[in-house]
Length: 514
Image (cartoon, rainbow, N blue to C red):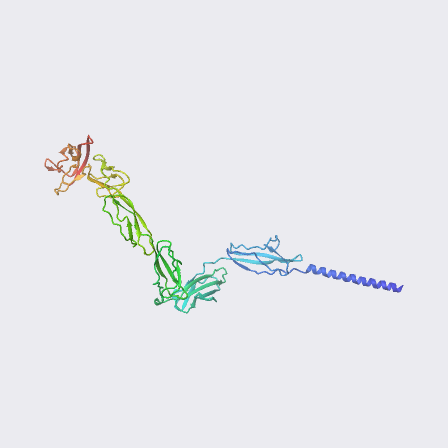
């Protein structure tokens, strides 16, 4: 009995101790799960972006392999759907936040990422060749110091060689040593420390050359004249041994004419050499005879056996017919450069002496604005001239002066012309000067005698007193009355004449000047 009781007690004790151990382990594990925090993600902050640059979504590295969650605020708010992409249109600073979740536990507090948008300072940096300090063995560069700079990262290449990198705080000047005259140096300011948004700037300069070193390429053996559609290749090495390139790069022989081509020597091999130009002409393959015209009956022009552009040949027919229009064919001689083609010209023979009559009309005598109008011949094939004035297409001449005039009409081909010198405009002198100098000493209406044989002119003073009765056929009035000279003044006249079978009367005044 005692053994049974002792065995039960031992079992109870072992069971109790086992349960206590399990309870203790469970309590310890629950406590660890409740108080162990998730490690935050790894970020880079602050981030600098240039204004108006293209931004990428923000990134972070989960330190515990968890899931990232993004926020726009340090606390509260709704999580963003994805990593945010910063907006770079405005200068300023924006803070974003990120957390990491592992096993359902999110890291706290939220980790900030500061994004600074910096103003784009493109254009504030200028880099230029310093010609005053450049020599045959060095090339000088200058630039302006930008406000806020902490130094300049630069690179340069001599004659297309490898890049040399460097850093310079001050001054804003740099001399690049070169092996000799005319050497090309390309210099770049890559970045400005302290100003992240200053863009790189590059210039290319050459070391100086003496006048003797500035040699021009020659192409003495290169022809400058080619035929249409010839295949031509320009030499890439000049007669005096310089290599280079042409612009345009190929010769165009598809059209006639002359084109100037420029040769630029290799700047590395021939740094002091000058550019050269050469004119390449593409000759025509057709004789440049032109059509022509002549008047019927004109002296026959000879047809030349050499074209204006130097092509020889023969004509068929060999002579021009001056009475009929026709075609004439020129056949070039064989063996000439560019194998010129046959040329056909047309000769037009215009009729001669087709104008047989010339008629015109004038406005009435003493009309204020006198007009002469040609009535025959009329048409687009005629030109008209009054006296020695210019030819015109209009048949009307306005503001014609008093007196006799001539009218000439010719056709546009110059093969017919007719002139009449008896165009009379009736007017009157506005003044006369009876001073005995034999010039303009009397007053009369001379042209009226041709219009009307029985015309009479009556002259009055300003009070209506009749001073003189004269005929257009006579000597005129000499400015006297009963042998006494009349004073300088205005005098009136009345004229009676016949025009177009009608008796007319005209009255006006003129001046006597002494």
